[in-house]
Length: 239
Image 1 (cartoon, rainbow, N blue to C red):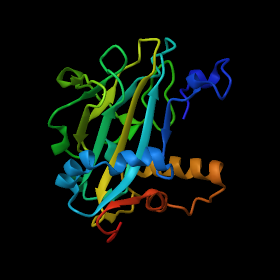
Image 2 (tube, rainbow, N blue to C red):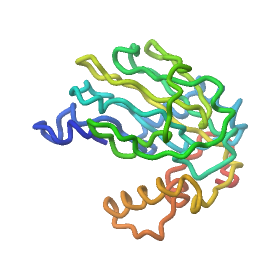
Image 3 (cartoon, rainbow, N blue to C red):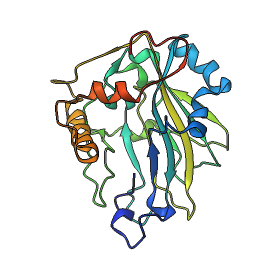
């Protein structure tokens, strides 16, 4: 994935500055090893139980901001992107690969919001543009309650998919790197998002799948996530 500003710049497509994040590395043996680390899974299992699936893998390479503030990530809830439940059996492990602070765009969270409902999401109306699939909570205003999560290399946080969080722009000349995985209990279940606040993200995912792989719109959000899921511990019982 490329930053919306950088993608329109003079950089060659193979330049490091073009890469904002790499998703779905479950087929890469070395990167996927992160999802199987005992140091990670011993905490993940506290949330998911013994049957654990890696559902969403991501390597983040937040680039220096070009002055448009497009390296920000709007406040959102990860569950907006997921057609599987229950939410209390899903957890994200997010690990800093270098020192991360407010200057290079650390995470910001709203403590306690994991106890609330899933909010409607859509693209924020930002003047400088918004990166693809960077949906945010509509009419979000509660910035005063946020806590900035500064981290050192190797620090890991675990959080609920309903936790409202985002990240600031990278004001440095370096890249802010992190690696993450969303895990779910294999005993969970899929839902049909049609008629819900998640219908907009399903339509967007269908469009991306059509352009990238030639798939028609009969492919559902459930189909896409079921294909991504990888067993990391226990048995694949349902998802």
